[in-house]
Length: 101
Image 1 (cartoon, rainbow, N blue to C red):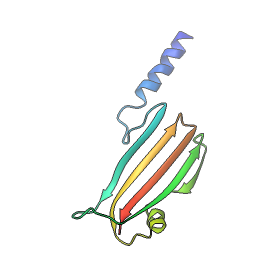
Image 2: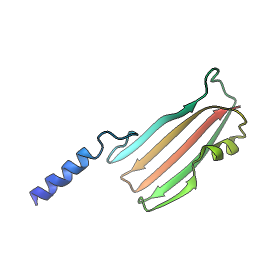
Image 3: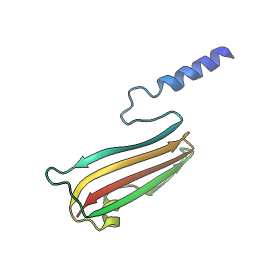
Image 4: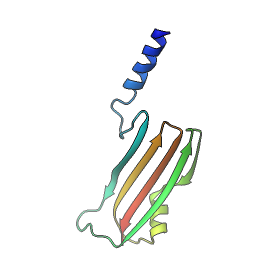
């Protein structure tokens, strides 16, 4: 039994190493850049799109940049951010935010 618990602990500790995006084993809430235009970064409009997942088994929604542009009525993109929130793999929420004019 101790061996099984030790192996499980090692898997949990080592599974988060060298991830492309920051990801916590128990809880994740991170906001990251996706893209930015060069030059002026002032903006007048913000559009968001969102997708969610439950138990890592069912995922729904449209978190695309295209949906965020449509939701914000944006014609010219200035920059894009991505936000991920996940609690124990039970519930996940993923949001794309587009800033522009």
